[in-house]
Image (cartoon, rainbow, N blue to C red):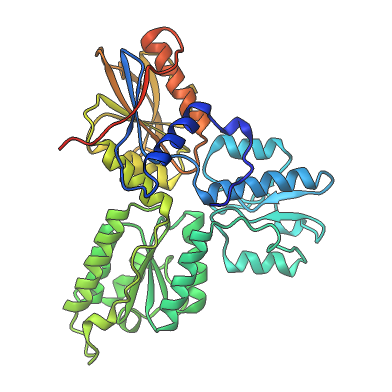
Length: 411
């Protein structure tokens, strides 16, 4: 597999040793049990897969190399490179300026750009409209494009679906950069629609089956449909793709539900209902699948709490948090600084969209058993720093683990 030049500050000797050991033991990636780091009174269980993925490392490699090779040029990023505050701040410190925020709001007008400027497309990709605008200004976006190849794979799959006269249903967060980009590419090829979750899929299913009045469709989806969308015609044949960082089980549930809705629809078409739903399979990236499967494997291990590290606006990280929260107390942190002491922690609440200070998050247990994972845009160094803090809080000292062991899931 291709290797990338990632700043050493993002690496971790401990985590690298863990990952190398697990990779050597399980080259086919069939074992999703966690790794136990035995610190005596503290047992840390690391997920089998976590941290930087191929697309993130590729984007970071390209971005820092661009900065190094172009010291005298203006360098811009369309938006956040990835959803990790440390990485984005490091890029800003290197002189890169952001043209938009993560929601697409303009920070620097495109009118200020010149053909001599460098504009980097982030790992999420960008819309055809923005790409076209930049090219019209003489900016060579193809040279500085860090779009994840797995995102581009979804675009290609969407195009194939549209060519076969299917409407593309995108399961994703409507305001997310990647979903906005995927929608743009899909809508250029044919009718497209974005749905956020299963609740919206249920509403869509009612329109497919003719149970909801057509006029209400535009109230629910008016800002998330392609131009000229006609629900009476464009919901006859559909296929589902997704933002690559969504929850795999939810995407599958949505696809299964909409396929059933197509089969139950009272459409006058003579076409076989089975032929009106495109077999898109799962369009999640490998890292999203691996990280979610690893969390499910990790949750088979009895533990007192879980800590998930990553950017608060990171979609893939938020889904890891959701999985852990179903089983045990879970704390979502950007980095080690959120672990204030052995008594207090700052946790990001996904429902309230704010940090909340918790007291007594570390129970008085011996050994204290903690599950840890991180999102695909979180540097391994952050995970090691969190482990070091926990060791200090529990043991009063920083020490190497007594043993580094693979833990098999309970029967």
